[in-house]
Length: 373
Image 1 (cartoon, rainbow, N blue to C red):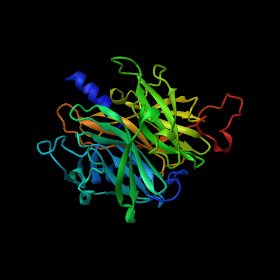
Image 2 (image 1 turned 90 degrees about the vertical axis):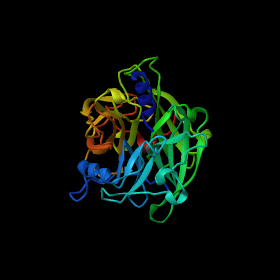
Image 3 (image 1 turned 120 degrees about the vertical axis):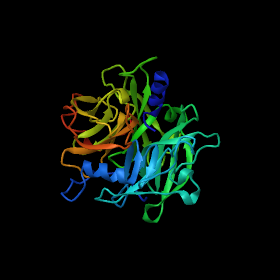
Image 4 (image 1 turned 180 degrees about the vertical axis):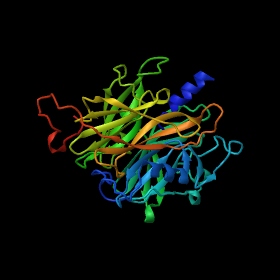
């Protein structure tokens, strides 16, 4: 999930429900709703994991995906002496509307790995890293990577599908390989089209050359019609929307959302694990041009942790006017410490792209038409 292929490389070198549930902006946060500190505490009580991604459910709650998971509800799941990798590689929670309470979803009855890893391993031992969730129709789709064992290298992009039952209980329905152009990028976020026609995804590829550490990442986008997230032939991929080497210094995940009247906004962890700040980009169209904001924000690790990476937007979560809830992953023990592995949360300003200079006026595109061109 997210930047872990980059992490593995650096470490080796060093030693549900008709329609789109995600449409519409989140309401402004009231004084009774949790802020970033509430999310920090709520997630810490539910799970110890490196990162978090979310998607809105039709009832106003959210489904939260977590990455490598070492504890659930305060109980350590499995130690390295008893498990091949020491922990599940994904876990899922349901967040109830207006709260920072995260109900972890057990899959033990289905015989899933460790009782919490929602997607089973492949027969050869490779496993799935969740990345980009999307609630579409009656299904939750999750795009992510198949990772080999023990090498920890990516073997391709896949879409896992779940259906939701009473109480938003999830049932795993299978996984589909993304072939052709749909399998050419590491997809990290999925945002509903503002017109309700489908989904926009952002993905990344390392194109900066051998040994590149900074400004190595190229961003691709994809438009996927509703109901086609597990049908790779229906994906419309636009490569190189944000190319490497032009000063963006993008992380492995560039998490994008649409905000009415402000166009598209994306947040990323600058230079991924080698950097220390978050940066924001804005555009009137998904395919650009994208503009990098001058302001940056610190990405502080969780206690005892050394690495931060994989920024994710949470646009369905209430936030103060003009801001959006953003999280980033935190893991890897700092020297002499034990990492309290958990994502970190903050509210960041949304901003707006500069006035358009393409002859179409100074405001956002009319009729919300942001389809693949």
